Amino acid sequence: SKKINAETLQGYDVLLMPGGLIGEQAFTDKEAIKAFVQAGGGYYGTCAGAMAGCSMGLSNATCGLYERIGVTHNELTAEGQLAFPNQNVTVDIDHHNGPAMEPNGATTLAIFHGAKEGKASIVGDTFGAGKVILISPHPEHKKLQNCDLVTYAAAYAAGIEVSTSVVV
Image (cartoon, rainbow, N blue to C red):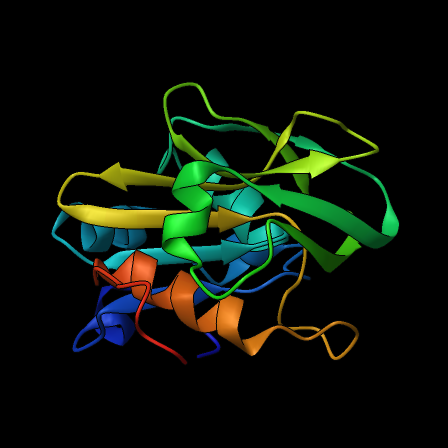
């Protein structure tokens, strides 16, 4: 949608905020998004969408800019391995200046391995009745595209419990 507000969010379960959203403030109603998640909607933010999730206060995590373009090595935590059951422990994902996150009580699902060692690259959280997942790099990019990770991230934001016996 060209505009995200209470009306455009009606009938949806999850809002996906992609990267590349410089100036997203011009077309997003942050209070409507917060109300949507508070009421049980899911929020899935990638790169700038993760930064927007932090700036809106949808997660306890804080986001600091990680200026890097290239492949990042992301090590799944035990919680991350449950959230993304089909992934290897270390997942390479294309990165374009997304955040390095401090969880501050949010669940760390993956950390950067190598540069920005120990900073969270994927976090999960709750906001009111809703679930939130913030992903710094871009699993949806053509380079190293990881549809499995994207699918499980959307399921996480939707509050869908996954089983390790499920294959996507």
